[in-house]
Length: 272
Image (cartoon, rainbow, N blue to C red; front, side, top):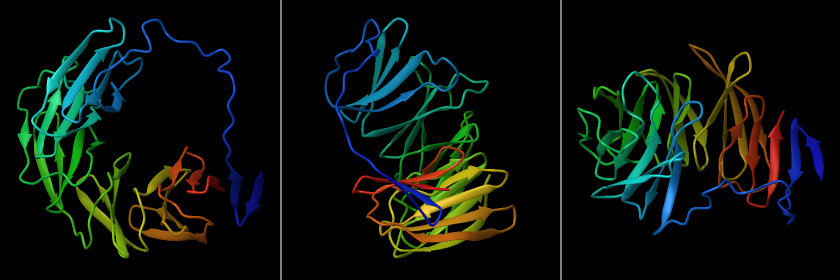
């Protein structure tokens, strides 16, 4: 069931069971794991040889997908993972604990020299890769940009409400949702704050940014207010404001050509 309305393509989603067809298990899989597992991530780059996950919120696991060998590193508190951009160093995986300790780990989960680094406050959200390093927002409204050599750049943020979702990163642009009934989207480029975009109404997640000749940013509130802006080096121009039917507990995503929104009722909406 499809409808085109106000430049939005709407599709009702349903689920049907069917046979797996040509799907088959790779030898050695499935692999039974112990405990409660989550945060599965793969090594950055083409043809990654390692995957990582967290067991029971505090144990980091690394598996060589060729040899099936698993190694682990036990942490003192809950930990969030983020794959490291492959640079000139040995770092493969960022790990940030809820206490604010930042680790850069090798495939074997051994620490890279100069790490861990202890931040002065606790993380507010999961970390994100930014440039060749990582960005961590802490509860004292500071964003810390940490390089693979251990250099740390703290940036004070103008937060009126609270930051509860990991920022959106697109190339060298970082978008942070300052959550509140009268919220804001903070846009940064590198270490400089570019713009502050006001948004009314509560929302989940973070904005979505893509490039179609120019950079565009979309943001969706829980009540279904969708806004799209065109981003330039010096300005943010609002070009779309529309009301979508439904309740939205996730924000928009994009595939480089279109923005997609999924309502709680199972309506997939594509902005054309």
